[in-house]
Length: 121
Image (cartoon, rainbow, N blue to C red):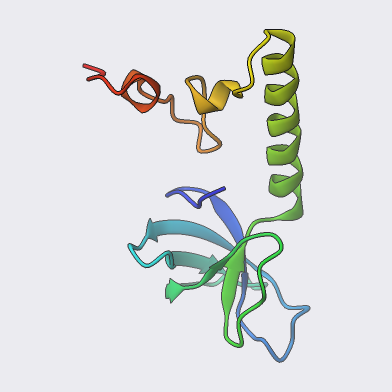
């Protein structure tokens, strides 16, 4: 799952205190895979965090601040993947619906050009 603008994620602002987690809104996804965040702390104060590494489930945690998905989001993505796989099997296809159309995790419809190599316009 790739982060997209507008998603809510967890932000770990202090690696020396891993129990501290702040809510953050993804404001931008940078070319290098880092994200720019609008973070809200435990007092509801907001502050920016720029070029934050985004850690995926199973990745090694960096030795600095980082952002990651909430456990709920990871669980929902896995359930969606399993449902797509079951649907594809029921339809007699090896591909999941998101691999050739339908919705991606970011909620945007895939264009026909993604699966057919043609122009979607």
